[in-house]
Length: 161
Image (cartoon, rainbow, N blue to C red; front, side, top):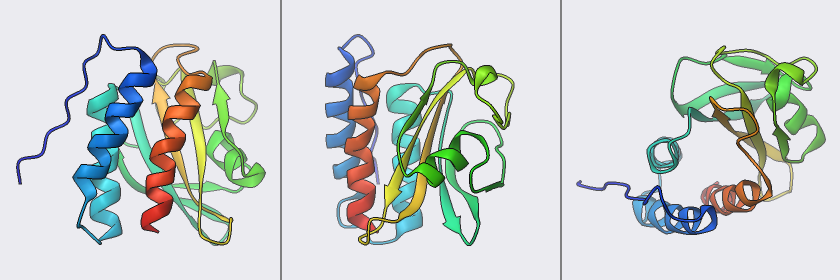
């Protein structure tokens, strides 16, 4: 298997996300294993978009449990409602945090993380099954364009659940 992710860093952000979406679809085409697919999606996001950290947490009971990720080691379990990921799960909505140090109850897995965006990934019943967590080492690094682009990746993940 010789897949690689190639996204020109100089393109406008919306074009980068369009390329990421196309490449992720191609990368997982024909593979049915969810862990293999999520692992490759996280890698494609990390290296295609140059994020500081990207990963997915799975809802298990009353906690989020760390799934496939790329970047420094991460928090393994997060209670519902705690931190940005727990709040995203509880509210069932995307949360963009310009400065993680100003988010009440932020869980600092890495002091290098400065801003983040977390999106719910819903099962076929509309319930949150996972949360997609993307961190940046820069303040205020995510906006509505990132949300729109990342929602395309979430749609892909939801389609393989």
